[in-house]
Image (cartoon, rainbow, N blue to C red; front, side):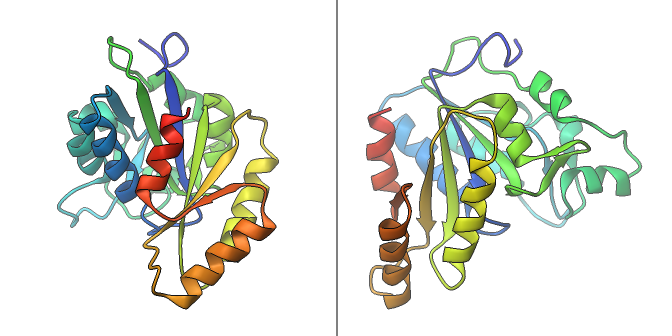
Length: 220
């Protein structure tokens, strides 16, 4: 079934302020916690590019957390073994260009509709996801119930979070983003100051732990 006819009861899109901020780690941790509470979950990565030397792809990690086959998490024909943005990787491999509509049409959920469906994008919100759009374009097409913005807790995060939220705010969607500071260390003065500044200067919720996000998801 396509995403146009079926969607999870709670659809969450996980985006990042950039690459290597821990989107997959946070999403996988949340999926495990949700399953441990008895909820049906599903993870989707519409397209992924990766270093062929990597032992596991994001689809493997997410599938391990949700209890799904990696090929269900991300269609095998959307695996691009080149460490570039997905449409660039496809071009480098000489494969057919694809669009955001292609990714959305290919997004399928289990017949037993999950309580929570988690879609992870590639790279940052302005990273190309297809030949005609970035993560913001994908968000607009999916219209999720929640958007989790994963950010590093350290130096530079205020700038990257603000730029990411501005990009999301310009999109036509209904979900309010939630900022999640990954790798947050309460003993690190900079991490605490970054969190406090963001909490004081943004209207967006700012969370610094997976348990805090879990509490928020339970309210949704």
